[in-house]
Image 1 (cartoon, rainbow, N blue to C red):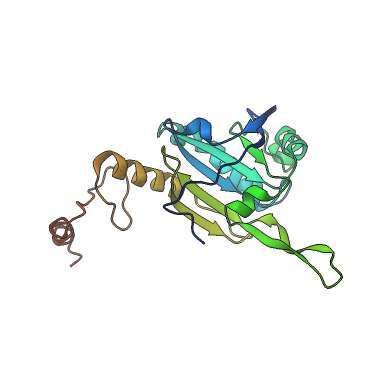
Image 2 (cartoon, rainbow, N blue to C red):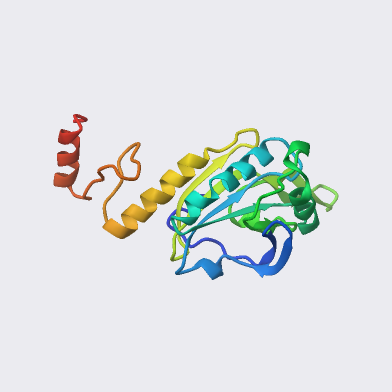
Length: 212
């Protein structure tokens, strides 16, 4: 089920920040009232598509920061795996140079609460606890506003990397709506005309853009 329009599930977990520092009891509460948050899940450290995404987020980090937006990654790996990956040079499959927080969801409860865990626990016929599926997260991304509400989410299957520029566009759209009260039409980008959320506003926009 979608989390859009709902409060982002709370959690407290260990994260690695600034590339090498363990922070216990890391949570999203510190950003409430202060920043937007792009909270994204990826399947596993030391894999193939994952480093391309994490490094792409780092490359665009300044763009998020100037939009008052924190970027936070999360996977089911341990904090030690995160730390080791962060110390590994990029030319050897690592993500050295990434500075935003990476959360350890070793219990898999955060991924489960956000609806991106690729499986679930169950009991077999012998009464033994088993996991059905893959005990990793899909590539979920959640845009959370300053009130802690999820405003946008996208979930990709594991082989499919995300578009970081699209995440930035959605931050711009949410900020524009929050600050101006206008709604953002298809393919809208920052600096373009938006619409008043009225029938007259829509008709005026369509007439001006020859879309009617």
